Amino acid sequence: MCYLQVDKRRCAKLLSLVFFCIVVAGLCNAQEAVAKEPVTGVLEFEGTHLDYIELHAKDGHVERITRPEETVKLPPGEYRLQQVQLKGGYLWRNMAQGDWVTVAMDKPATLKVGAPLVPTIKVQREGRLLRLSYELHGIGGETYIDSDRGEPPTFAVYKGDKQITSGEFEFG
Image 1 (tube, rainbow, N blue to C red):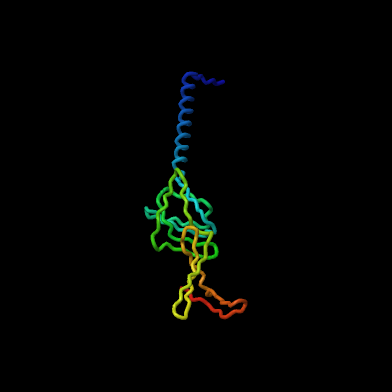
Image 2 (cartoon, rainbow, N blue to C red):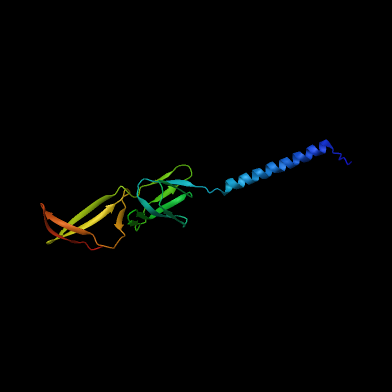
């Protein structure tokens, strides 16, 4: 028979050292996992019917969001709304380089964009002609165009119950 003689004090010290190393390694892995989680802020959308949104950050990167929910998580920074497409194909592009919205970690930022929509028609008289201009405005004041150029919009003019004329509008 073979017996192993073990010094209990040395064995306890060795086990304590091994346990300490395991705990330290676990803490390091936990810190790495926390460090790997991206730091994000929240951007809330006040409007609805959003299909696609493009935001340009001040640092140069572009955030493209397809079918955004009421809120999205983004890296903290300053963003400018560049393009919005609504469900149904209506499109808005930022040509005026609008305001910046700041996304921070501590409080959500809000962006007014999309529906409810307000349709407006402007009528201008030019001699015997009437010029009709149609615009569709979003909750943030943005003006949408119909990106579907398949068939031009039509109109009809009535006097009482009798249709006087009808026709098609030109795009533009």
